[in-house]
Length: 307
Image (tube, rainbow, N blue to C red; front, top):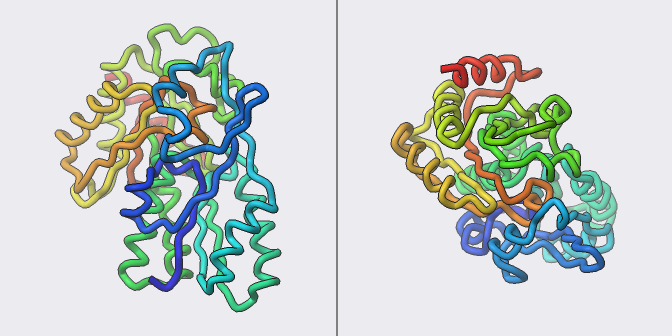
């Protein structure tokens, strides 16, 4: 294949999906629960999603800690020592310090392995959006693209990857600072569903609120209609935490409206789930490039939500 793709534990891809998209391996951060510290597990062998999300309350939260430089040197160094060129696609730098640490380790390792290529891409995305970018990188690589061409392609595509979905409660996000305009929406959200999109800096941005899941489905589909590109040729990811029924309903509506090439269903990973909470469901897809200030996206949301 010419080079290998590596990622981290924020991508939602379980073992079968990593094999499908030819991801050589991922490294993990840590899930902290009081005095207990364990690695995030994309394969859910340390606990089930029901156990993880079912245990989350406002009095019991999981926090995340990034791995350390020594572990990263060992993780990436193994592949470089074996003669591999490495493309790392990582969690948004707006949400974690992981990418900055990997970039520092990269500089150190290239001094040891100057003959190797080691490219890091800050995807500005997480969860199903990061998974989608990994799938696009694998597709690009399979077409014969070089590591430089593939990295450049992902850099270009990342601000065309959209999120549209909701959480039941902003409490978890508020505790960990994962939304760029959160203060404007704090307060009572009884029966209200905040609808989030990415901003160009890689954070979540709340476009507004709608009342109940039926309004959420209608708004998501309406928003997608005006922002998606080439849906029939697209692979779309839908991720959820503890909202399987809502994710399945969203899948049915997306399939009916857009008939995409494929819809991939994933479980929100532990690395992201601790900050987002049990009430998450969202669709991730490729579409029109995000505007710099989200003014176009805000106008679309306002118009669609008002119908």
